[in-house]
Image 1 (cartoon, helix red, strand yellow):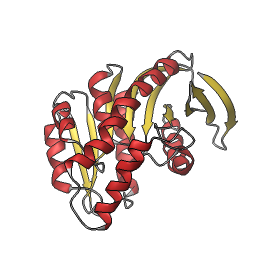
Image 2 (cartoon, rainbow, N blue to C red; image 1 turned 60 degrees about the horizontal axis):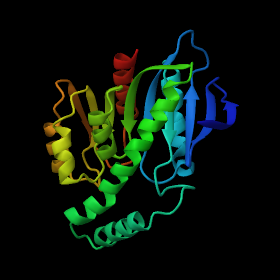
Image 3 (cartoon, helix red, strand yellow; image 1 turned 30 degrees about the vertical axis):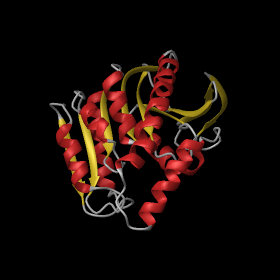
Image 4 (cartoon, rainbow, N blue to C red; image 1 turned 180 degrees about the vertical axis):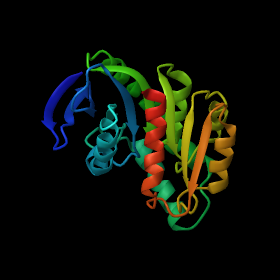
Length: 244
């Protein structure tokens, strides 16, 4: 891991950009901490870190106020990373069927999501290795948001992640439902009831499939971008409870 830039935000949070091989990322650490900080891995949709930055830094500042560090990385094929023709083709297929008002086939979902899970999860784990080697980061570790299938796989294979918060808005391959049954860590799942890009029943079925003894589903009226502030606050409280 190589840090490429750093700045102190106006609330004292230290923001450092880094690269891990070809993977760009950002680490935010609290203004002051007497002991190594817990860590949340901030997931996000594959829209690129530059586009997602305002939302990510807002989440990072909120966590830093609770004494929790946060970090994120650019997903494969997104942002400034090399193009991924297979994923671009799958995205184009998804746009076509959605614009036509047709149902999204399992084949399109699998082609769009499964390769992303297979490639990005090892990158997240390598990033976690590097972050936990820093003296200012001590764990425990949570995972928050982003592509829910990536979060599911991480929750299954990464024992250092002790809690996860998911946004039930991603297209989920059928194979991930089987993996969801193997998830046992505490979960907080946010569902927008009228999400125009989400199959509500599929989201409810996925929540039911999770094997965790502690799992909370918070459903609110409104579309994908209409998440109320109190819902975000509840998710933050979930992580404070499990990481602090």
